[in-house]
Image (cartoon, rainbow, N blue to C red; front, side, top):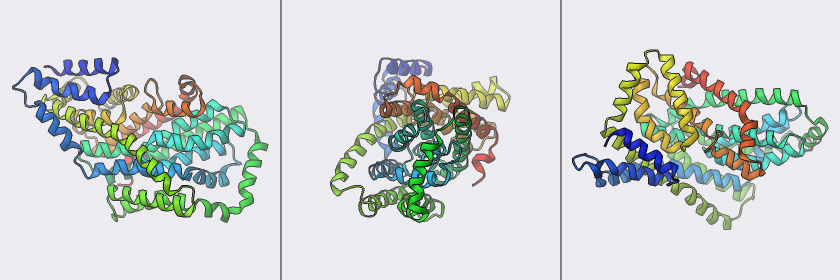
Length: 429
């Protein structure tokens, strides 16, 4: 069975709404079923699925998912938002910019874009609307800025890329810092432009910020200190070598529990069981997709698909800039129709040999890939962030997407800079 037929059957499965994990399992087994001499038998596929998820680094994913859920239940995002609103709230676009910075910080806790949108959006969108901002604009800001949750470390997609490529997860986390800050800065530039063009209700904003100022800096800082300290502890443990990313994820779970239960007292012991159940419901589909994706990628490797695609691209495109642009466009399209986890696990073995052949650093490519797929979080038809944001505000997904287009352009500008200026990703390594 040819690779073209395998991919065609895979897309047919997706079109007829077969769950992606099952679709991956089906197309992984078919080559061996039609050709008994092919190495990838049914037993090989099952062993690949089980062996692929038997991974210590992978344990970081459910821990970060659980930590993010505990933080959301504990109302941590509101305390992070308050401290930034205290300082910049009265400036032009100060409140939207405070939302963007909150997404940056919350992304450093959850490692997930949809989780960032849900936690930050449920709290900040009503505030922005109450202050007179257009509801669609407020929703679009959160939906797009939530994409920073997979770029700012710790990042679940970076963990997946590390598994697929064999690169250091800690190095990938470090490489995501400057690109995440760059994207956040560009989003804030657009927010300032938008607010200057459409105006703001300065009286309502001043009244809101005055309530924070009435608490005084010490009061606001005391309330938000442990929330802001969370990403510092998590990333500090990783970058100083005190803990691996997986160990840091476990630390983040216990830290978030202690802060939510005993310091902020925004959560009760009886809530823990419900959070753990939701965590399992969230992670179980991811794990199934992960196992099937690993098996599929190994089958493709046995079929020599990565080598064939690499040889075709390198023989038809001789300019490094053109090759990188083609790969970016391809990843953007994939991000629109496929979830991040299978996209990374399937495409990394195919694309990594191509970019390394033209001299691109694998860590740099990992950042470029994740930024591409992060844009997919806010582009139809999949656009998970759009659906999460829509569920918070009841605004149609396409209306949010339309309002988000200028913000997506900012993301694309950042993507080009990240692609062609390697130092942006590699400066901290």
